[in-house]
Length: 459
Image (tube, rainbow, N blue to C red; front, side):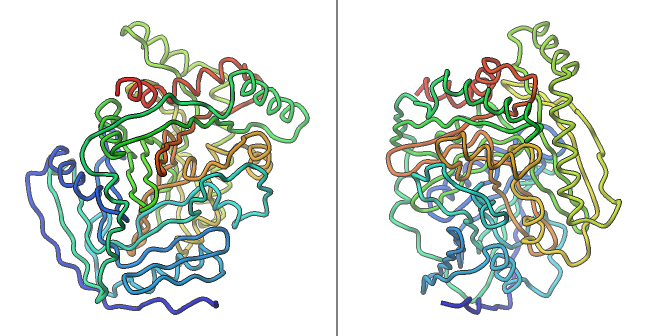
């Protein structure tokens, strides 16, 4: 089937604001939203400059999914599929519903919410895929919500938006029952690498670096475990243990995504765009003195400095593809940020977008984020596919929103688990450079997954 005409509707928006509105009040309402299929919650925690807003999306009037070049559009009345360019179709869908009136100053007042899986790379570049795809999840999953809730954590307010599109919302799927109650029962996580094999894979990456193929590559291992109960309840427990700016929960019908990310991939407001790569990790200390020592060790690490600087250069190049010439700058380099379990080194790369550029064009020029691939990006992705046994799916893709009024906010989907049927899967990884030590790299993946692993042990 050829590409269909998308519905075009004049959209009206009803707005209601309440105050005060706390994190707890938002979470109480979001918990109910998370029970329904085709819903999403983006939760901010901590006090960083990127953690002002939390948002929840529900009752979508349409949902766009893609599997390679196969595209599916679902509405309450129909489900149609065709072959095409997923990013071009994403743009068409956003534009077809966009209103012709001002939306005000809210961070999001309509558009699409959802995720882009790591495997979307395969429709952007010509890449091999020999890793096993054992879950069959979409490359793109974005829906247009008719109900939106926004929590402004600075103003302690809640804003409720209702979009009138002339189309009924998609009825919830039967699988929404998995998010009722707070029952949780999990099995022992089992990796798709044993420690020796993971360290051997690290050595292979280092060999590629010696041969001049790459400067660095991100390598991850995936854990699988039995899961029974409510994934939103797990997400809440993780947030309570380790709040961060880019938590996300998506109920996608036949699977649910639990993301505890602290890394921003892309933020757009008008012509301004930024990315915030994270490279460099140290565990938090058990005492203030040990914690300070870990922080100083990260700040003085030549390896971590080199790793982050290479990724910053890669992202400057990616962002330059979509920006006005010479507008891309590193506005902050190697800022140290402290989280519950780790310290991270973070940089900010920002630029001025070319006029008229679309969300799909922005993703085509930058996706996936360089901090979770390596440098150079394409060769690193080829090596990742060679060495990792399974495709990554949502892990190291992006979750967030693409708005109508030249706005977007997408995370890097690290610290992320996917639940499908009676199993859950999560991956952890790290950047490998010339002087990486295989045993240290394996240990770093466990530090990054510690919050989830310890939460699972406590259930």
